[in-house]
Image (cartoon, rainbow, N blue to C red; front, side, top):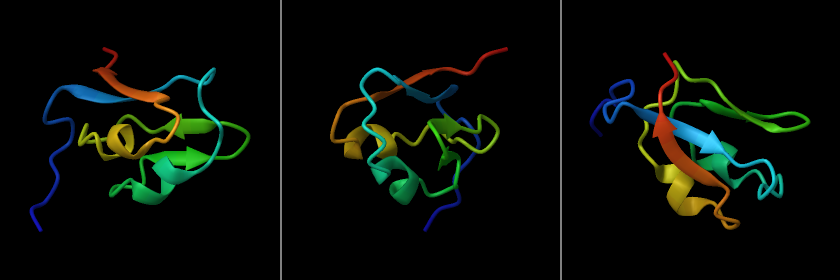
Length: 70
């Protein structure tokens, strides 16, 4: 398996909390552990590679890729 580069697309996962059902699928599928869930789903930008696996797997379509904040 190829090593994932940090933000190869210049984008990271953005969670729409209004659509998120806290199902945890994104946490399970994230290959870098960038997504965590306590009382809400959070993305750790330095860990997110922008691979979009979470976007594809989210059953409620609550995740999209967006630009890395400067």
